[in-house]
Image 1: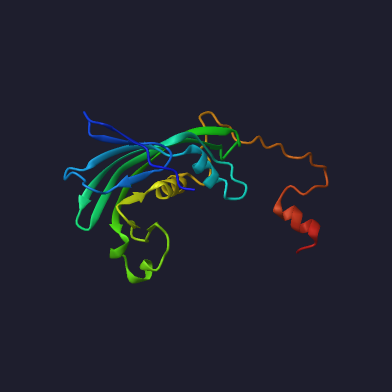
Image 2: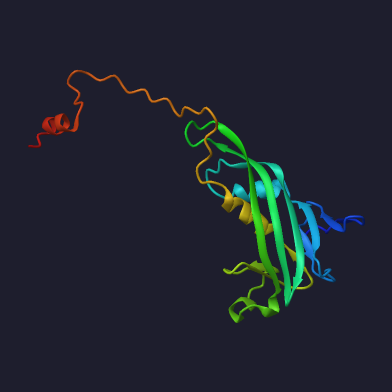
Length: 194
């Protein structure tokens, strides 16, 4: 299901605001100095994508905000700016949930699909990113939401951040009897290794 694009233009600042329905940018008639674009990405869709992985324990708690400038360049455009949000994840030491902010710079080239390598022209996707950081698109608009979701997810640490004052999990050794070996030598001797 494709939702419609909703834009409101602030004429005094020449900034386009995109709703969280679709993160779609029109590349028609871009001013030479670039077009600032501010928007919000759907928090529900981003968390749904996070939950595609098994045993996911990371959750975004603030809708990601994007601030970019789209500048025309030969054969396409350049998208430069940042995306930022907040997420919660278990602490890597004590497993208590910690809320942290994440900010990721964005710098990507947008080009029409007709300029893609022949192997990429066969794809039926509306937009796709190749390995060199170029988003190829069809038509005069490009939807960057999947790309922005991906760079946010990849920017998260694999182990949660430790919070201030974290003492970690408290280790309590099991009670040992007198015949329990206390060193490697004693353990080997008990096992019969000479």
